[in-house]
Amino acid sequence: FELGTVKSYSEQRAALFSNAEPVDESSVKKMILTFEKRSYKNQELRIKFPDNPEKFMESELDLNDIIQEMHVIATMPDLYHLLVELNAVHSLLGLLTVVDLLQELTDIDTLHESEEGAEVLIDALLEGQVVALLVQNIERLDEQVKEEADGIYNTLAIIENMAEFRPGLCTEAAQQGLMQWLLKRIKAKMPFDANKLYCSEILAILLQNNDSTRELLGEMDGIDVLLQQLSVFKRHNPSMAEEQEMMENLFDALCSCLMLPSNRDRFLRGEGLQLMNLMLREKKMSRTSALKVLDHGMIGPEGADNCHKFVDILGLRTIFPVFMRTPKKMKKTGASEKEHEEHVCSIIASMLRNLKSQQRSRLLSKFTENDCEKVDRLMELYFKYLEAVQQADKRIEGEKHEMVRRGEILDDSMEDEFYLRRLDAGLFVLQLICYIMVEISNSGISQLQQRVHQILNLRGGSVKLVRHIMREYAESIGDGKSDEFKEAERKRIMDLVDSF
Image (tube, rainbow, N blue to C red; front, top):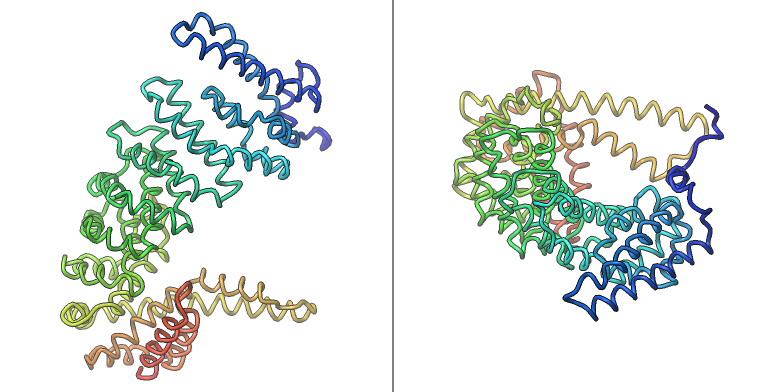
């Protein structure tokens, strides 16, 4: 085994065709022109003899042969421009039998081997409204027939490849009928299979960091579709790993959608809170993700209605047992202890921020129950995360010292990386815990304030340090919000901190 023998992905695939004539620019041109001629002849005969397949069967077979030969082009992405220049993309899009070929042409490894060739091809496909045509095609397919079910899978692979290469096309793809088809397929009463899993994956991809696709899903009653599909898992665990993956994809899609304020209202009306609350009680695999959804639904001022409703449906009885004890059995769902505690603390912090009058009183009285046991738990978490962050800070300081000693420059990107590492170590959870501490200490219930300060003093903690953590939190608040909001929120937090 010598280094010189390692072949690129495209070379390996080209080797599969090595028995054929050597492939170069002129042979590819010849192939494309032959394809164009046969395609034109086939169309002509189909129009002339629409009710007599025997008349165009031979031309159909000839066309199929040349399409098979054209698979070799997928090994040479630097020649993709010929497909565009010779107008073959337009002809290919007019045929339903080329899904396999398109999948090979858009293979993500191949696209990255020749960015230039890939850009030209993707541009031409999008200009030809490839997604709309692919969706029209799959709407005609019958999944009971294995070949046609495979055709749907391969079509989804083409869309995934293109979206990975050019994430910006997700909005266009969703609007060209893809979002509607995915929702229809996900809610179809069919046994779980690879296509349903793939649909959930593509849906989650379309919704990532994209407000226009989130809005589109909301307008198509997609929130209800997601909630209906997830409701299966409130009392039953997924039966296999692939079904668990689909469940997680649907939860991710729901969390993405809840980033958009208008979808929070749809989630509220669709009784999403009640479903998540039930999942928390049932203690099945869906529990961890339900917690994440509640966090997304209740955070920020747009989460106020959901916070009030959560208290009304007796959600406090569900959330506090989860706060008091982090479940041990989280290995199956792949969630970490930190992730779990972050979501729970974020939900409680959101409620403290958003609740008014009677609902707020109900929340605060929870902290006084059983001799303030929840305050004790809060302080236990405070010291746990404080220690983790201090250890990370110590390591980072050591690294900074080393870098300065070596004469390296600490630029902004390096500082950002260090800040991300601090967050990763638990800084954000620590900030949430401190926020809860200052909120309950300012609630006007003296026993809460006394308990917080008493435990701080007993364990050698410092009010000054809590204030410092909160000031840092106030500085980082409100990404993506207006300047007025950021300013008002910072002032609100600093007023709480000054009274702590």
